[in-house]
Image (cartoon, rainbow, N blue to C red; front, side):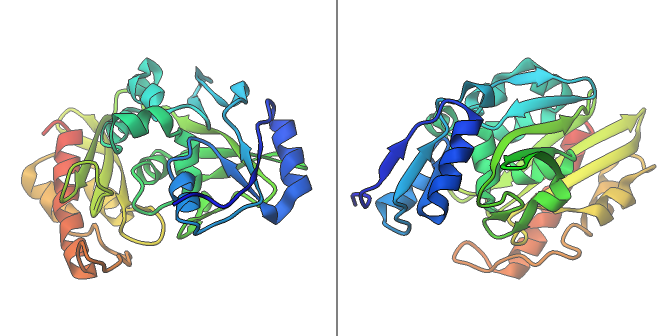
Length: 284
């Protein structure tokens, strides 16, 4: 289908984009890479009067080292994030997740911040960002504010970004030297995950010193599998230990039921994928 008519704006600064949002309010939609919004427009599930394209704002692109964190601009394409050496060294879990994200064409056009702001619970980046303790820098009329991942994902397709605000960058604390793995289960290639598990583990010899685990598509937002994390700390990275801890993966989760599987199937799947992801991250 053809989208309904709309006016198109392409600001070159964050300030111009915020001014456009303030002027047009509920009649406007932001577009980043367009991989989520364009299908919606074509199906006329949404018909904004104004589309504000963030693609010409160069300050929203790029990856930099900022001491104890790396900073990824919201408009940085997935393909850049997935091949960046800083990300690979200090936030390997992001690299692993991007490798599994859709296909090469989507990774070329889609943006890191756009996917996170879209907040699809089946999206591949929410769980890794949550597991790594990411912080989201949001610009608005009153300046900028920083929101931790635990508060950023509010509900299905809903985040802490206000209607008059823009996500500008994502700060990810360095997890240098941590093992990482993203285990994703799909029926066909490039599909949204039925369930996926993001695991990053710091080992001390054969012992798990720290573990951080995020779950994809197990609730209306990404989840931390904190019961599994606590059960793993101080334990040997053996198959039996990890299997026992992974059995707790679905604690507190409220997974959906749909054509790909019901809630009980997803609960079971989360335990299997958590075991695989943790063992791979720990190098066991």
